[in-house]
Image 1 (cartoon, rainbow, N blue to C red):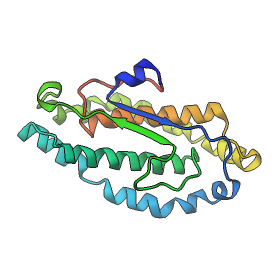
Image 2 (cartoon, rainbow, N blue to C red):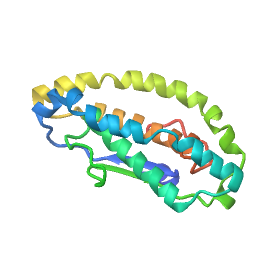
Image 3 (tube, rainbow, N blue to C red):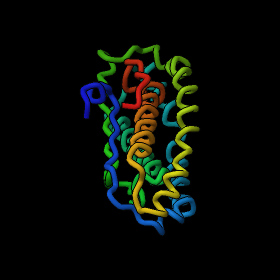
Length: 189
């Protein structure tokens, strides 16, 4: 990892797969549905509870942070599987090939009590850029055909999709996980 990536409060790396299974790639859109539903149901209301704890109590309990981090890791594994970045069906427990780290904040020292009320608003420029990048990441359909033909994910396309996921994670850590007041960089690295 580069020093810039290590310096931010949230970091993501995904191991490049040497060979991908053509059959699971072909059926991925169907294969991912059950676990995507579980991930979607478990991630609702997390942000609001965190915001209220920081604003009114100036606390981010370790157990709550651990839950939020593990749910974020699970979401990253589901996203990696859906994006064809791995053949492994997303585990609810194991790291697999998706390496996601989020630093636990010292709320009293590192976080502004009132900033969580507007972080989602301050991140609006990122939302616009990420919307464009995710539209470009749709070219992962090209990767789908490449995997079906060769069993390999084109490396440049893989790096781009992982970079968009990394950027999304940093914005999520800032605006919704509320673990840092450091504004996320506009970078895929």
